[in-house]
Length: 460
Image (cartoon, rainbow, N blue to C red; front, side):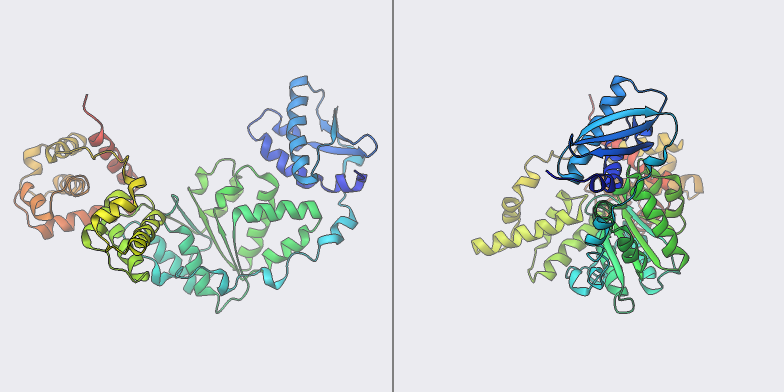
């Protein structure tokens, strides 16, 4: 293999980025940050590295060699021999120069107009009209619509976070779909693609082309920004791209599986900037929203799903909207292939792999719910069930009604009867009030989760 010194040294930024990612959490991470290539001997196939340290022990040397060697293989396609030595200060020969021939080779391969978003790249149905809104996603959807109507001014950046399959990417596509007629240069990519493009640009010397492509955007939408975790040079590049677009008033929308402060190994300056706008959470949908989603997906496929099947799906797939859609597809496919109508039995057959191992839900008594609520809020059961409406009783009563609706099979009328003979509209008002507060109040949301865990815990 004929490889020149310039080829290998020119690839060091890409090698360093991957090696730093591999070394995250290891004692040699800081050493690697200060490592520089001192040269490459093509005859001996040896890459020489100098680390700013007084001395290196055997363990640190081997750890460095392991991280750099694997990164070299990813970038260069082979693992050169590594000579690692300690040096007390920087040396002029350690400055990395990107080989000009490598830069020119692919500087024209990125940054063309074709890299920007077009309507053909947005999945069919990924718009606001097809997004089923409920208490769990109402705020996120409203914020996304506000950004789509008033980009760069309403909420910038908009940071949408939540679990897998809850609609974050759908909202991202919906924003892009609404913006495209007014803003032809929208860049919407996954963070993984951004990282891969960045490393490839470092490798090919075309980093300026990538910067131009991103910073020339009318709006930048990045999915799964948590993928930046631990990638130091990529974070550095994104930091400057973010600043450039923000200062020009360009809209930035990011999605993540968690809040910025909960993304591990994310720089503080990025965490701070991600909170400059609005951070909204998409939560798992409630039963009513899950039922609406099933009906919506069935309507889009032109099929009729009986109410009992709708309830079956909503009761068995509780945390992932994407799985709900997949369930509708599977039921429709089995119905079509078997020429049988969609029934509860057919739904069981189609989704046996999803529900066969699902444990029977624990029977939770209303008395147990009231005991837990009364103990937590320090009120008496007789007072909770009475007609008294003082504030110290009304809120715990609302919480107890909400939990009863969520954790038992009682109807609204039955719940009202249990709680002092109240009518179903009073119960519904209490439930909706707690649902609304839960979206805004993190402490209440945590309390409700603790109540549910405590009530579902098996009794020994």
